[in-house]
Image 1: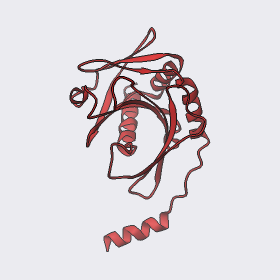
Image 2: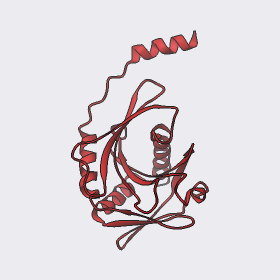
Image 3: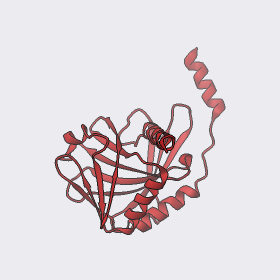
Image 4: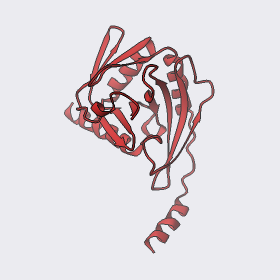
Amino acid sequence: MGDEVHLAVSAVVGFALLAVPPVVSSKLDSASESLERTSFLDWSGERLQNSLPDGSTLTRYTAVTTEADVEGTELAVEFSPRFGCSPHVRMRFDSNASRFAAITNLSSDELNWQIGHEYFRYPVVADTEGDNVVLHLVAVRSDREALVTALAGGSRVSLSLPGRGVEFSLLGSRRTLVATRAHCLRHEPLPFDEPRRRVEMAADNG
């Protein structure tokens, strides 16, 4: 069990480092677009693509919602073909969020989720860059799937954070999550331009 948790943490940390959302990283070329027939009530779907240093493209299909009361706060579930379309849950806060300063010092065991009568508690990994903080959920796949199932079946999720809690509507989450993951499962990889990459690397080394 210890090895499984260690591998899961390593995988999610790796995902957090590689799949830095465009709003956080200015170092990676990125693009985003809305997905057809994935927007329902308070949730919507989009496709995010990052050009990585090795010349490959990382694609993430994302179901996202925002908190109505605090501008600059969003909850997202991402599905990446590179990671078998398993769910990765994250929250993003910009400097307009009133709890921004406290979140930057969030310890790894302070994130509590309440969805209806169900309670979840998972550690997180925090990324900070510029004016944003992104919290990535760290859990084995079965736990992430259980949380996403609860998100899809609820009407509202409450999270305990330093300073005050945060709430997101789950209205429309089930249909958006199903549609967004379906896009991931139908994903056709972009061609990897290895010869061009070798030329660029040779030029850099020259």
